[in-house]
Length: 580
Ligand SMILES: Cc1cc2nc3c(=O)[nH]c(=O)nc-3n(C[C@H](O)[C@H](O)[C@H](O)COP(=O)(O)OP(=O)(O)OC[C@H]3O[C@@H](n4cnc5c(N)ncnc54)[C@H](O)[C@@H]3O)c2cc1C
Image (cartoon, rainbow, N blue to C red; front, side, top):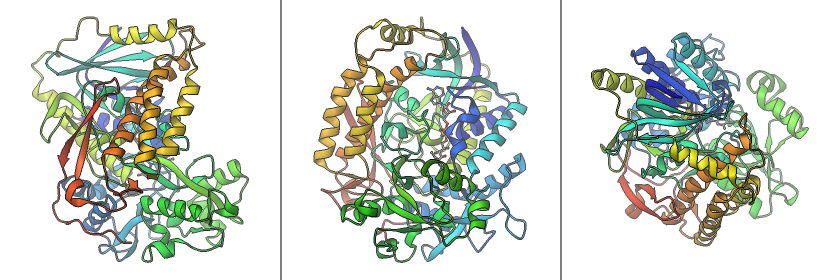
């Protein structure tokens, strides 16, 4: 079938729903196409909080938030975008509350705020309480509230439709997407004036991750395959505290509420590395320190984890402010955090890089201003860039709502401006490339199962492209990915049916994963310095002279690629050495 809408938003997490709500309020006809039911989007898993300088607990200013974000980004976040985000955050929280988000309260009845890594008072003096939260289910409440609002405002939802291709005219104008309906196995065309990707992150490319199964980075790969670039893909965030071996997240809010990291000697080792903020140092630093402790033989019982000690925090705080992680520890590890320390190790968590956009979500093909007609991206799949080389905790949810809203407003405006124009023409037989791709997979009878290829991809990314990297590991990863590209083209699926053929979608996703995994590994090899989450053992220093710039990765889809550069915007804060 062919469906027709002004705007098609791909993805129903916080970013997609915020954009949909605002585009709809601006009068546009908006459809949201999502491979999951909207309420299963990863935004619903966000635990610890959403940052805004409300100052409910102690003095705070948006400029302090901006400074922390710039410093956290290791000075490569664009400061104009960061200023917009931090200035707009307090208003956005109030708005979310008015929509119905049940934030936790402090004793004065105001929205409760807690400490989080890298958030400080007065430009780095001491930790500040800035993270607004609803217990440790913040994302869950935001996602449910935004979904309610979208339904109420008649946003049209296409649930469990997986988008596999972006449609463009020969002149490079966006005209729609092609999607596979998971329930029926039918292929559909969506004809639109505007397409907005809000497809989330790619944590699933790594063996240990906090991300849900659907975090396979589809949107990034689809855009890359259209000859458009991905920005700063080398910056991958490892969250310091995943449950050992499982990767399930223990929110940084646990340390915000007083939790302490300890090594095998019982030492609070972060005191040595970050004397001012200690356990509340930013994630890049804490993850690197945990691995250093493990490498130097101070992992617990010589194993690859350390302890997160909450035993002094008290049962009341654990049950009321951190109920989710208390249950996770009990259920998955058989550990009661009230009485025992929790075994933790870094887990792949967040994509700082992604589809380059301007401040209104408009996708850019090269330098600033080179927007692609009708194409937008928001949320974790996009790169504005407010997170630079390392995102601060609580800043993703702010990014989703602030830039989701801006994109929604801008898209509605664009639809108004173009109201007398017809939609750009669809190509002849728009579904053909998708049909050919799926038919090829379904007709193959010999080859490897998807899971074998995916396991090897996740393993090489984990071994060679995680917290520490060097020339040798990255060369190995790229060689492995070259072989994996061939293997991914020959996977075989046992299920040849039409209804809920998730194995078929896995087979498509493995192709996507190879494409952007290559962008990550190649970007990491290209950037010969250490900055934020990108830590090169062979280039341990930050090198502002050569690398104070964004990278743009372009692929030919066959394993050939090239890089472009983009300037970093600096407004108020000149780069200096990062100390915590
Ligand atoms: C466990 C966990 C805890 C976190 N806690 C916090 C926190 O406390 N504070 C914070 O700021 N950040 C947190 N984060 C990060 C933050 O939650 C995410 O970065 C953010 O929610 C991503 O939102 P999104 O809207 O971009 O995408 P998502 O919420 O991931 O949604 C992606 C959407 O895209 C759809 N989709 C994907 N591919 C396709 C396709 N091919 N076709 C159709 N639809 C598609 C999916 O169905 C889904 O609806 C956390 C992340 C995790 C994993």
